Image (cartoon, rainbow over all chains, first blue to last red; front, side, top):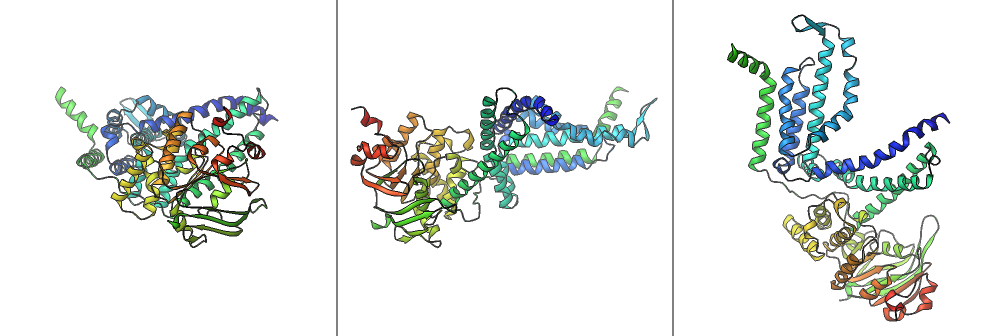
Length: 284
Length: 244
């Protein structure tokens, strides 16, 4: 089968990356349990700040570039104070960037109005909107990643719950977090067992793969049943209980306010232009 | 006290696929007793445990926990009295942090915040796991997971503790710690296990099940020394008895 052959070439690497993926998720999880000023902030403050940040960035017009640049300050600060390695976030952003690139790649062709960038140099307006999309993408994705890397997932869930998200959604999220590691370990075990007994090529075809997915599904259903039994045994009656755990501190209020002011100022005033004029004034 | 008894009277259970897992099982466990339930793989040990808090309902016969007969109406009440610790702690620890997991039961009982926190500290302290409080379960070792799983059940303060293979997956030292811990509990204990040395250390009485039938019920000292009976049930003499 041609299809089979195509798969064969790809799979061994695919398997390697499965292990890698696992440790990657583990890494972002480890990062989120650090103890820095950013990590200690109330998750609600961070959630709201991130949300407003995203809205503000997205609200700029499609040809905007210069006014977006100051917004890099926010993820940069989070990264530095939160002690998150730059390369880690950078690699993740690159990894998902094809989505943004495909959205904007045809803009230069579709939007061919000419714009002067420098004297004597004109390019099509599409290039500018393409660049704008890439910048917005980098800002939003890196900020969202930083939120996850600086807030442990259980805390994100608590924050969401306290902000009024229905408990059903929140418990789905926390189960997802709790069992993604268990499920991945289980998958890793199955994939390893298969590799050890497939002696090279046989056994790595798509049909075996489908069966493995089937096995995994059945095991998951069985596990879900056991978990449900465990929940019932401890008095579960349909409602996930939760405890209030966070108390807003001054630091949280200061953080939220300064993010608010930062966003407001840079959204409404063309800060780069003002700064440029100021520098011009100094030198002339 | 008579209300901590567990009594099975002529209990039979048939799974929907027709497998007869329990056949006419009767026994009575009184307050404070420690009972080991042993038998070959597939003899019905786990099925038996699942009847103790009404996850499964007997096809015929009655289960009596304390003063309550097990029915769909009394199930919730009975779950408060009987705490079950599962074989695989990953099934038992379903909340994202240890604290929330141990707090799950007490919160479901409707306890208030400070009482819940005290209860969690108490239960974790009992299993020497206080420093694990804020960790997510996937950062724990198997031994720590079992300890937390026990704490999560203890936190509800059940009268009766039922355990399925509590020492599976534990290294020898963790197993020894678990045995010492179990000895300190004054609850009625029901332990299903293949680890006969553990049962010999912790329990006073032993029930042997074969194909869903009770074939022996007596003091540990009698049953665990009966080589023929054990070997008929795919078991062996406890290691500590094999040496002499």
